[in-house]
Length: 381
Ligand SMILES: NC(=O)c1ccc[n+]([C@@H]2O[C@H](COP(=O)([O-])OP(=O)(O)OC[C@H]3O[C@@H](n4cnc5c(N)ncnc54)[C@H](OP(=O)(O)O)[C@@H]3O)[C@@H](O)[C@H]2O)c1
Picture (cartoon, rainbow, N blue to C red):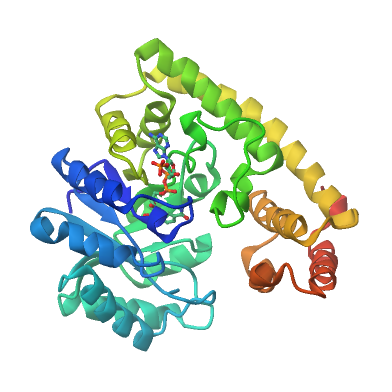
């Protein structure tokens, strides 16, 4: 597949970034096609995004690549069993109004299904012409490698922006060993690197950024500083901060596509323009120095936050929930805990998100806080 450097995603259609104007979204996809974007990403789990995208792309289906994802429709716990995958693929065909998917991606890890079974199911779909390629995403690194050993994934999805660099660093050796294309997502940092957010930014509870660690505490301050740095650099070259952000991602070895999720034509045009420009080498080097200094500061602050959240009495449930998610995600990204060890606690915590206003939830959150204190060694912080 010859994928365009910029790909367009449809995650926003599930409401994670607030309500969107559907007609404007449709115009955005048409404009993307006109501008030469040929890679469109969706998922069975993004509300009715597959259906909407299928309808829009139908007149020029043969000219584009459709990527979708499998494993978590309507459920928190993934299912990657052979039966589920075969059924889900048929349903995605129906919603997308197509009889083949260009890239079928494993959405999340399913510890209950052997990887061999999932790989066999995906290979079968390739042989039958129902999918052209398969890829993986959101997996622990050892699981990603297992997919590479047992099968032939075309690509790996990774959150990758200047404000979220950990996944890329972990995946680079696999790209080199298995020639696994890296498809970067949230390349504008979910809007953070556009420079449109301010220190005191508030998000509604339904917006993913209300919960996303990228928008909490020191991590948010760090992101805002990167956005300012990109604004300064962009000024030198007549580029906007978001164009610098996307060009920065594309400057990295192994990245075959930068996915972004604009929902207006104006944002789309701004983002697509980023692929026509390269950040000069000396500026990239200077940015690396800037990130080194930032990372040192960030690690220290993050450790302090984890400690505080785990030893102090928890605040009211909404805030406590966000804090505990922050602890888990931050401890994982700092390498303080292993994903396998923490996944059961994460599922339990995440399962509470819809009962935060119910009686007794405070006790459940306290129990999770105590369990996290047992798995995260506070002395090591
Ligand atoms: N996020 C995930 O967890 C995830 C995981 C796997 C795959 N993906 C795929 O990757 C795609 C891209 O990820 P993403 O949607 O998180 O990308 P993103 O572009 O980093 O974030 C989208 C958000 O950024 C804003 N934005 C984008 N360009 C902008 C601009 N030029 N000016 C101002 N605001 C701008 C959008 O606002 P507007 O709506 O106002 O334009 C939207 O709120 C997804 O749609 C999905 O298909 C995502």
